[in-house]
Image (cartoon, rainbow, N blue to C red; front, side, top):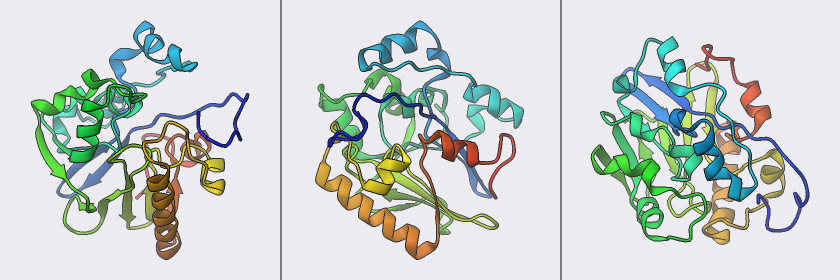
Length: 238
């Protein structure tokens, strides 16, 4: 399902499904909300079995926040790269956070009944939350250039990546689902279910230029290799 030109046909693979906590003097941001702590077991099997995928939750987001002496109520902002079910599963926990949502993404995800991977109930909490609506431009979360949501449509209608400027680790780009594997990145492979092939390729080009210009580190969020290369929780990039 990750290339429309057959490179992965007949192969099995493994993916990571991480959530990221970004800490800033003006507040904390959760970037992507994972599979959903309360979906472990039969509920998760029911969602993924039709796709031929076996999903497991080994570590809950709540437990990791607790290790940091945090609860979802302590998180000021929730940012979501896109609204596929493996990125919004815990979104309902952040009812007191400001949700940073793209209008095109929400419009597409709530009106296209045929869109694969969309389970509207999993992100319906936005209706009761405080929402900061994002348009067609990038969004500077804290106003100082250190955390910016980058428009990178194509995988979905309003897909985004996140670029971070860290004091010691330098510039880091979290991919969302612009890329799923290193081969997707290296060969610019496009999943057949993407919203727009042309927009995906344009987003590839844009992110590649940012990576080169900023000498940035790319973290492909679903890559087990990239996940393993990050500091082991509760250690972190700074």
